[in-house]
Image 1 (cartoon, protein in one colour):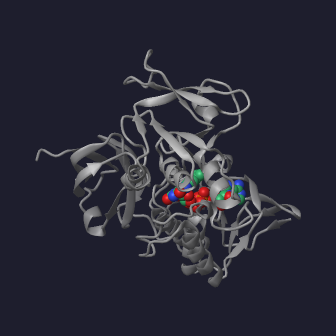
Image 2 (cartoon, helix red, strand yellow):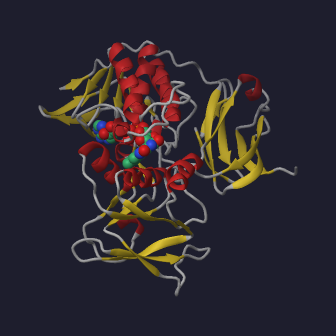
Image 3 (cartoon, rainbow, N blue to C red):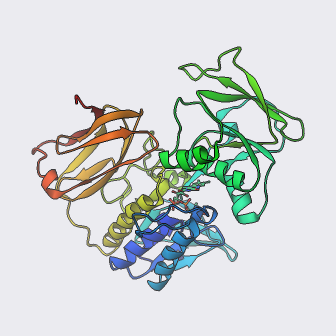
Amino acid sequence: MISKGVDVAIIGSGPAGLAAAIGAKEAGAEKVTILERAEQPGGLLHQCIHNGFGLTYFDEDLTGPEYARRLIEKAMDLKVDIELESMVIDLSPDKELVWSNKHGLRKLQPRAIILAMGCRERTRQQILIPGLNPSGIMTAGTAQRYVNCEGYIPGKEVVILGSGDVGMIMARRLTLEGVKVKAVVEILPYIGGLIRNEVQCLGDFNIPVYLSHTVTNIHGQQRVEGVTISRVDNNFEPIDGTEFRIDCDLLLTSVGLIPENELSLKAGVRLDPVTGGPIVNENMETNVSGIFAGGNVVHVNDLVDNVSFESEISGTRAAEYALGKTPPSVRRIQLKAGKNIRYVVPQSIDAGKEATIYMRVKEPAEKVKLDIGGIYSENLRVVKPSEMLKAKLTLDQLRKIKGGVSEIEVSCVKRSK
Ligand SMILES: Cc1cc2nc3c(=O)[nH]c(=O)nc-3n(C[C@H](O)[C@H](O)[C@H](O)COP(=O)(O)OP(=O)(O)OC[C@H]3O[C@@H](n4cnc5c(N)ncnc54)[C@H](O)[C@@H]3O)c2cc1C
């Protein structure tokens, strides 16, 4: 039997799903249900026990679990139903969900759905590191879970491949636990994560960093015994003769996050080939009417605060959709990634609605001007691919878009002075 009484169903109870549920409730949706496959709500925040969360969303410096707890308590006060150990396994374009829990398979057809499934880590297999397959190779997120949630230290001497935020945070965390972090190895000529993590997690602990280098071999039969590191050329190809070995018993990979969109694809949701997440409009609605999305399932965010801000919008708009109160659209404007912009989210906006847009640059640059279709500009001292750019477009700015224009370009180019 298909249950039909739910206004908004949300898949995932991370900071995106919880903020979306709060947004939906506050916008008047009566029955809001979150389906979460894990045993507890909060998503990945539970394993992020360091501080630095909530500086803009809560105006406070919180740890990941503290941040999650705030959202969980608010959702519970608003009487959001949170179904735990409930994994959504199918989703159709007409918004029929199939989920499983300890009682078996269930079906639900809510009026609106919000995708908030987060992302997963790219693994060693996906980047094809040669060498044997001994134990002691894992993603930085797996090590984070072992150390912070399960109480295990996964090695004594570690090399970390990739300087994404999770990798840098684990370099500090493992150092504090007495593990020797022998190197962070990064294929790019610059650090892949936030500047604040570079300073606080690597610099403050004197952790050796090898930029423009990669791991080209893994040694050890049963257990990792060491890795070979090589310098790479401009095409990221290892340069012969530059190899050197570092002995270690643990290799962590921190080589990118992939939005979890298998369910989205089943529902016919179109994905952006650059972000790997659904193409959304200013309401965070996908191409499938009534299916919305928020958080890392849309694009990998560096700050959880932005995940919550963005997902609150998807909750509000999903509630309006479910209640038949979606404001009419004025004129659709596509946002095109121009010079030095890798992507823009949302990919389109409405000329008659204020919108916050998020962007990432392709290359680091200094003294640049961010320009959005001539209606918004901002001078920035430094930009990096790892630091997301955010711009709020007001109605006054949107009114400057000339009639008949259906696409504007976003660019980030060097200033003349
Ligand atoms: C391994 C890892 C470590 C991280 N560590 C840090 C860190 O140290 N510091 C930091 O600032 N940021 C960190 N981040 C980023 C941060 O966790 C995210 O920005 C934030 O959690 C994203 O929120 P979200 O709600 O979009 O996704 P998540 O927090 O990932 O939540 C998604 C939720 O959806 C659930 N779900 C997925 N599929 C289904 C399904 N089919 N059915 C039911 N439920 C489902 C998952 O169980 C999960 O609870 C990390 C990310 C990863 C992947």
